[in-house]
Image 1 (cartoon, rainbow, N blue to C red):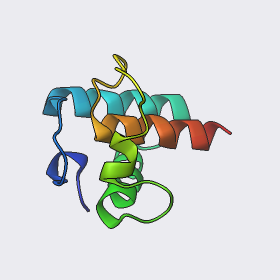
Image 2 (image 1 turned 120 degrees about the vertical axis):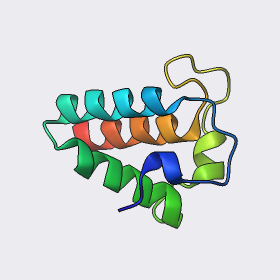
Image 3 (image 1 turned 180 degrees about the horizontal axis):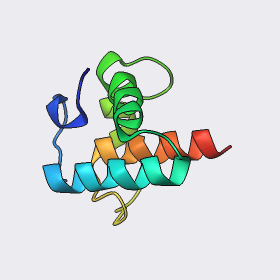
Length: 86
């Protein structure tokens, strides 16, 4: 399984602890296992499948996004949560 902290290809601003915390929160919100959430989001970013990839997610925020620290991994996690909640 690819971990979000292992993905390369963009300038990441969030710490490993911030990533872990965000995964835990998303998993709690969605009622899913943290490993499953991380696997799904990492797959989206790592493979470039679907409608998100490192560069695409990084460009999705038109301005500063304090909730995600402007980090593509956290942006993708937020997008994933939104999609799952829909």
